[in-house]
Length: 387
Image (cartoon, rainbow, N blue to C red):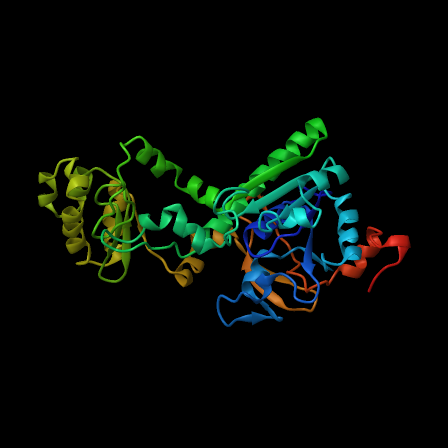
């Protein structure tokens, strides 16, 4: 897949949000040069989720930086800063996620870089925006989740706040940034002008909640009330939730209670009204749970699906990866870095003309491509190529 072939992306970002946007562009065919701190590189290289080490770097770094080239620079060194400025004159996209104010102090803010290259799309992701009382706080995923309100949607009524078990703010901000970059590139194709694209972890999480926040804003400001039993969505009525069966778990989506009463041997469900489905949802869910646990998941799937009851078995990763439905998606690949280290990872979720991006190159070592890039782009003054 080479829709963005010929585009040069300079990735100045670290951790997850910015690098994930650069990864999406790489999957679409763009050339991505990751600029890292000389010596130590992206902090994400040592941000371990487990004790698994692949070629000296964390699996997290490998997952989010495949297909990129690494240029090692010390941006406090005037000569290295000049190298970066020369590279930006040739670039199409710049991605950065420094704390607000840091990039400007380096002389690489939007106005500075636009003067260097008016066609550049300048993409920036922060923690909480570029101004306001939270501007100086660390833009970290769990912290952003905590202030966004999203943690009060998980868990059961009476529980404290429960975070999502993924770096959801980082990943969503990366997707949103990619969307803005692509839109800006389309406009540049029409006008020849670059653009400043901005988002933040907080804005990404607000957008994640747009459906429920819209309800809250038009519902007299009432707070959502989580179910006390088998909660899955604070605004959805029974039987919505995940229930244990005799040998696993079954998810039930939204449906009229009468539809469920016709397929489960639960005549007592017929006495509940549509209003009861929310007002008495814990009571109803306990009735449903007591019945579902009596038989195996396969029994219920065979009974509920033919009746068009929306349900699904709850799978763990091994069972998902072993399923035919997953294999048909062809979402896995093995990439290899320059030192021969193989990394088993996922592929991009997008298909164009039926084809999914496939990259054979793994994440780079720190400064792996520095010498070649300096020579190719003539980045050193007077043609002198640094080591």
